[in-house]
Image (cartoon, rainbow, N blue to C red; front, top):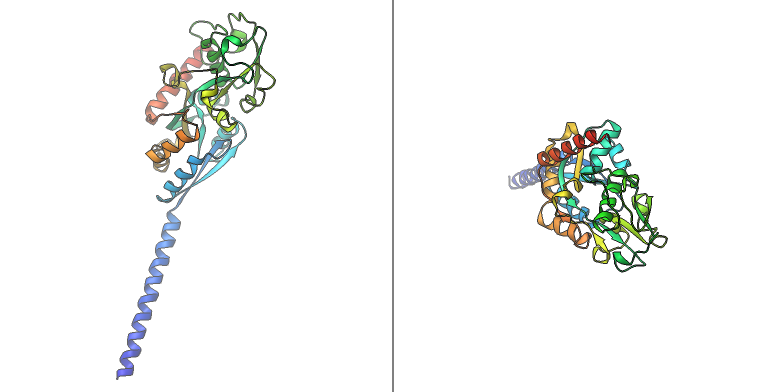
Length: 297
């Protein structure tokens, strides 16, 4: 009798262990099944703050995969084609131009930062030192080119027409007293040509990747001004995903204090974190689209 009782006890214990293992395996399977995989297109290197964001997202069963692109056009094309779910590399001015030229309806779902654009030089310590006839490099994509020309105007090197639009070109320069030669190059090349030009207008992300610090610039625009709103960088998605709850969670996680601290640290304190709603961002984008239509751009 005693042996039967002991045998029964062993069977019960083993069944309990098997049941517990089965429950654990079942729970793991459900958790794995519920994990949502999100591909985010980025331009350039994977910045350290992404690792913090990925870790926090994983705790909410969101697995983020970063897809790095080498230029500013491919991340939007990949988003439009469904190769990525989100991208995070562009400001609203750039997005409005891409949508208009490619008949797309990519929308902002959250803000990230305003990255200042600055004038750097290896040869001159300040703007007045730049000589007559000097060459200055600027990005060649329409939105960054227009912004770069406004930086040069603010620095007192050129004058542009009043009420000029975002997508002003070198041909629209009204006065150029020093006869500066404007040299458009791809944005990623702007720091690489510093040895060959008097100065170069470089946006914050490219400057950071090149090891340049904002306090080493000889001039910069004001990222907190009202005029900087078109240059708010965003998380972007296809229009059909504008209310996607997972994407909203990723945006919310980006704006938690530890991630924001990493963002500021990564840019050496240059970038200004912006937290605007998707509705506010879309309103700015819509205005940019209308302004572009009126300007025929």
